[in-house]
View 1 (cartoon, rainbow, N blue to C red):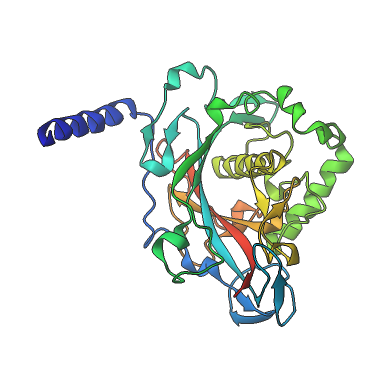
View 2 (view 1 turned 180 degrees about the horizontal axis):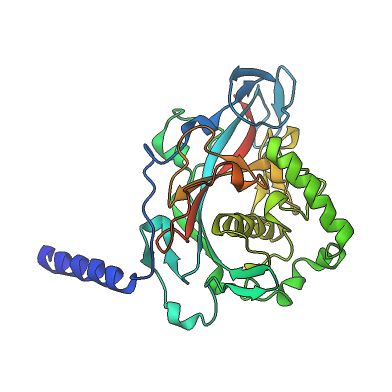
Length: 327
């Protein structure tokens, strides 16, 4: 049996290498590839106990009280938690954060997942597929011991857009985001310039929920990027759109602010300030400041982060703001 298993493993490795000739990526090393300083700042009862980079406001109260599942009193604590991995790829079913292997019949996804540099005036158009992994790294590594506020789950490939008919069709996606018709005008889009400026010095304005800051518009919730200026810009915008889509579908929830002290709550319209992104592939941004709020200009940090041919697909780690009532 051991010989059979060994032969099967060698055949699988050979297959993935052959079939993955156009698929690139690498596994995330939790020691060297993650910017662990992104956990900070940490506050307890509204008092900062560990400094860090950009942060949102936190409840300023000495204690907190929760009713469910049992009545309890604790201390309000806040930190940033690495919870999800994201592939943004031109190749259908190419799992960038799984080392660059194919996990599906890419030939059946016709016309999808490629960067079509079709000139439209001075603009370029692109399309990316997105893969979403559940990856609660802090909980696995037990860096904060048995911390009750950490998400406790196992690694999982939770969503692939190749199986979602809405992701590749702007008109069909109107089912999820009918309000998109309100934002396709110069006045609404001019607000995104202000959002870009705010995101470049802090967090984007959550009131401008249709804006993806310096990357572009978060509408529609599809992988079509009509204004492609660079691979990093387009992949960050695809990531933001995908997360907004998951919020609308009820698959992502709210964890920040006073409402999140006792647990997650519905957030059908994504608050951009709840998230930061950190590149894991092709070049991990593992040094401070390695993670950036949604919508921040990539011109600040993206120099040398995109490599021709092997560095035009991207992997990101999603950091989520967590406010919690710690017993």
